Each structure stands twice: as structure tokens, then as C-alpha cells.
Image 1 (cartoon, helix red, strand yellow):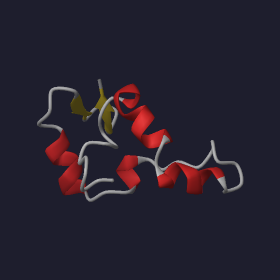
Image 2 (cartoon, rainbow, N blue to C red):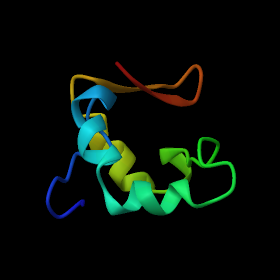
Image 3 (cartoon, rainbow, N blue to C red):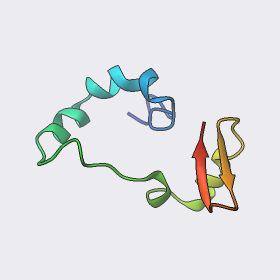
Length: 72
């Protein structure tokens, strides 16, 4: 999915929702216990260098005061 659409996990949710819901990945997740609860925070799943690259986009910024990344 990422090769086909590199921003599928970072784009606005509703822009990619249909594609995600129609995917084999979603079908696999539905078979798991508590499918709605399974999620991962991007800050715990990617390298810090990638998070820093995200800050170059207008809709992502880092708050030093809160020590958090924010997406607008």
C-alpha cells in the first residue's frame, strides 16, 4: 500500500478512508480481537529522522514546549 501511495498513513484521514477500508490489511485487522482498539502512534513506529522531515510540511509541526509533534 505504501509503494502505491506513500502518504496513505499521513494524509488526512477521510481522504484515504475508502482505500483503507477496502484493503486486505483492513480485512486482516477485522479478524483480530478488538479491531477498533489496535493502533500505533507514529512517534513510536518510525525513525526520528523521518519525523523531522515531516516538520517541513505546512501541516506538521513540533512543539518544543510540549515535546510533541502536531498535525494540523
